[in-house]
Image 1 (spheres, rainbow, N blue to C red):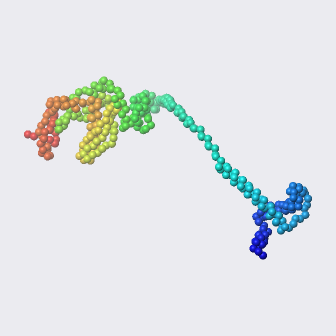
Image 2: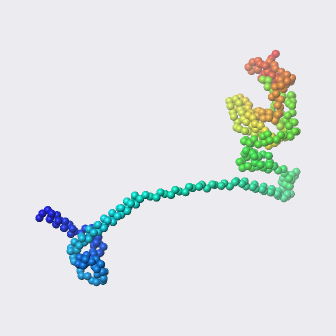
Image 3: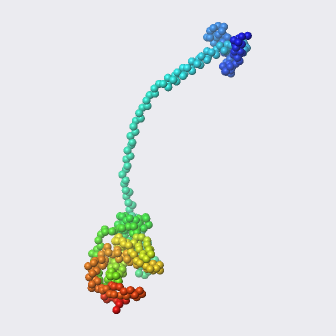
Length: 360
């Protein structure tokens, strides 16, 4: 047997084995019908007649064995493969044509126009009307007896003017802050300057504040500085505004140095800010610190009163020279403890005070 014959026999043996196509035909249950149509076609050469015959409900004798049908099935396989190849080629060609076709340019998006936001004007809500005052309870003899013989519950009491933060009682609310932060009508004088320079005082008050200094009230320090005792300033303020009509408000904390104490105060009169100044006073030991703080307050009061014109002559050089010439003199004195001698100023009608004594 030649090599070609051997290859042909081996190929025929391989073709007799069922391939994937045969397995699909037999798995669908159409193998017998396909075999019948194939046999009819080889006999009559007319697919239409074979289809018409085998669609009729006529019992067909048993077909040939499976081994005899395999060559017929192999004859139909090439045609099916050709159909598959053709279909695949057409599909690929259509896909290539679709890929190469130019895509239509996207339409430009319409420009968006921002909708302007219209803000409504702010309208201030109307203030609530003040609630009417609560009427006092009816007077009873028992309640009057508990209050006292000179005052009964029906006696009208003075009421403070309404003030919501500006200090003038008209409810405008112009203060820089309130004591409790709720605008309850109490001005926070530690931060507020309400009433500064808003109106002048009445003429009778101005006359008291600007009255000339009484030379009998002026004192002289050993270094020649003339001054008015702080109690004189308080008396002038009480005479002008009345006790309780003025006051000093601390503007800061106490600053304690090695030998000096300072603190800032503000002068308030008739509910108005007048002036503020830094007070100072010296001390020698810690035990004298409370007295030094009090002296610091008095020093700040004297400096604040300068803005009201109280004792303004004490800062006038003309008045200072005239006062020293008429009411003061300079004498040699000796220090009692150190024995040092120096010139000391004093009033003519006041003797030399300790620790100095007049030398012979």
